[in-house]
Image (cartoon, rainbow, N blue to C red; front, top):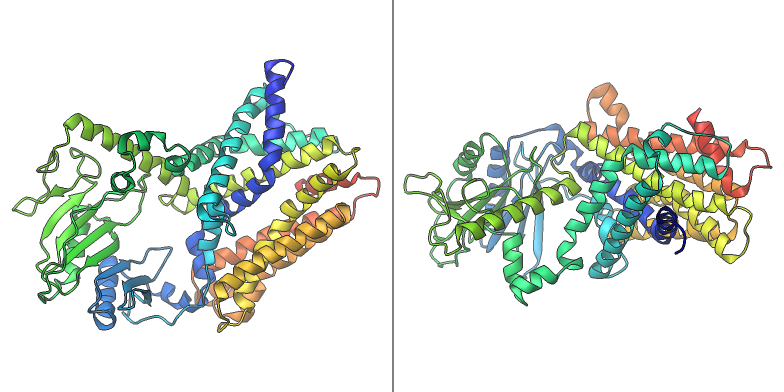
Length: 554
C-alpha cells in the first residue's frame, strides 16, 4: 500500500470488506433472525400454538413436567426440564433411555398433558447455528471461518471510521442519481445509523469464539487439561452424586421451586436438572431463567432430591467468587465468603470472578437474551442496518467499476444479485417448505434445510447467468412473493394466523407478529422490484438497485 495513512486505510477497508462481504450477508441475516429465534420456533411448529394460549407459572409447569417424567422415565439416570417462558410457552422434558438415546416430551404447563408431537423441523435453531456454524462444513471449520469474517469486519469498521472525517455529517447526506456517490451516501448512512451496535456485535462475536481463535492464554494456564478450563468457564453447582441404588421418593418439586424463587427475589426458574431421580442420592439443580441482567451466566441452586434441603448455591453471592459453590448453612441460609474448604486465595478468586463476569456480560450482549421486546426490535432493526451496510458496500464497489468488463466484474455483479436479492428467496423457501413438506417425510428437518440451500444456490447460479437489471427485478419479485405470501400460507394451513388474532384472539400474538413482519419485508421487496421495472433503459445495469432504492425512499 502506498499513499497517506488515510489512503492506505481506504484500500484496506475496500478490499478487506469485499473479500468477505457475501458471507457476512449470510451471517448478518441469520444472526438478525436469531433475535426472534423463539418466535420462529413457535411459528414453525403450529401443533404447539394451543399451549401458547394457556399460560402457567414456572412452579405449576415444573410439577406437571415431573409428573410426566415419573410416568415415562422413572428409571432414567437423569432428567432435564426446560420451563416455559413468555416466548416459549411449553415445557420440554428430556431424559436418557435404556438405549442411551435422548428422548423428549413437550408438555402443556397449564394442563400437565403431553402435547402432540410437533413436526420435525430445525426451525429457528437452524438460523441460529447458520450464523456461526455455516452448516455444510464441520462446526469447528465453520466457526473458524465465522471468526475470520468477524475479525475482517472489525478491521473494516475501524478503518471506515478513520477514512470518513465527516462521518456523522455524511449520515444526513444522500444524493440520489449520482452513481457511486449515491452508494457511498447509502453506505455511510447504514453504517453510522447503528455504528455502536456494529462494533459491539462484532467484538462480542469474537468473544464467543475467544477460546478457539485465541487459545494461548488457556493453554498457558491449563496446559492440555481442557476439562479444567471448561469447568471454569461453565462451573456447576455442587458435585454430582453417584446413585446409591437405594430407592427413595423424590421430594415435591413445588416447594423446591418456590424456595428458589424466593431466594432470587421473585425471579422464576428456567431449567431443572435432576440426577438419580427416585434414589436416596438424588440431586435437584435449579437454574434461574434469563431476565433483565446482561450476563448469560445465571445463578443456580442445588437441593437434596430426597429431602428437598438446600445444599449449595452458585453465582448470586457477591462476596463469593463467581462459579464457586457456596454451601448452605445449617439453618438453610446461604454461606458467605469463599467456598468452604477452598484453597483458592481471595485475590485469585476475585480475578476469576471478574473475568467470568466480564465474559458472561459480553457473551450475553451478543445473544441478547436479556432484551425485552422493544430492545429486541431495536437489535433486529440494527441487524438489518448492518445487512444494508454490507450490501451497499458491495454495490458501491461494483458501481465504481461499472465500465469494467471481464470475468471478475461479472462474478462480483452476480454474487451481489445472488446474495442481496437471493437470500430472501432462500429464507422464504425455508418457511414455505416447513408448511408444504409432508409431515411423515423421513429426515424432514434436514429436507427443509436442503430447500433453503437449493433455493439460494439456484439464485446464485441464475445471477451468474445473466447479472443484469432484469435479474435484479426477477429475484426481488420472487423474494417478495415468497415472504409476502407466508401469512396467506399460514392462514391456509392452520387456524392460528394473524386474522385469528385480530378477530377471535385465537392465536398467539407472536405468530401474528411473525406474519406481519414477513409481510412488511415482502412488501418492501415488491416495491423495489416494481420501481426497478419502471427505470429507463439507460440506467446502468449495476446501478439499477440504487434507482429502486431511491424510489422506495420517496
